[in-house]
Length: 213
Image 1 (cartoon, rainbow, N blue to C red):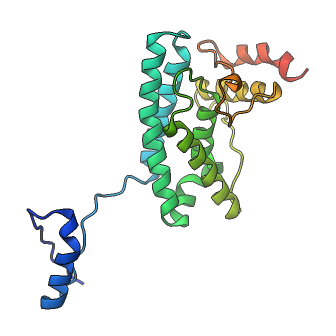
Image 2: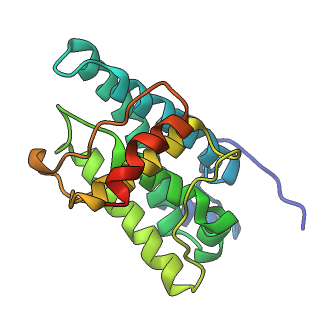
Image 3: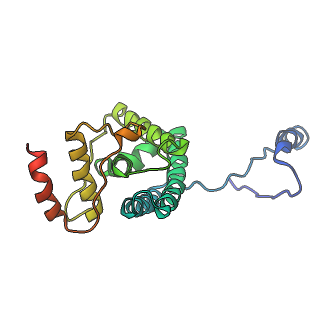
């Protein structure tokens, strides 16, 4: 069916219902409200995850108590806010689309996002609502995927994911071993700092004794 697209200027968004009724009543024409194209697709989520990881690495590399760390945390929160909004959009839509984006590749996308959130060390904004909201949204996505029977606990693979993500996985395991609660907003339950630099193989040697104790 061919559709004609017309644009009307000078109207307030609150006028839509009146306009819809006018065209429907007098001309039997059904008008639709324009909506911007959705950013909800796998490529956009991948780009956002890459920025989230880069911002988290910058936060962890900053000196504790420094102005630089606070500024980098603010940059991270911008990515956190975008991630929260994107996930909430996925949760409000078709579960098949959510599954296509977050349930494929062993649930890598939601797993990678969770790994960053579980291991980045925030000093100033750990109780920020955007941070808490994203953690909650990730948990809901995982619950939906579990309900669909497709959820898998993802782990980064050496030679596939970045050195930074592999370090984060090892630090997550160390934190778990030491009883650090990843979902806590308490300053006393902060994850251990992810050490930057160096090869994962060297870090494995440093942590092996602790993890296997």
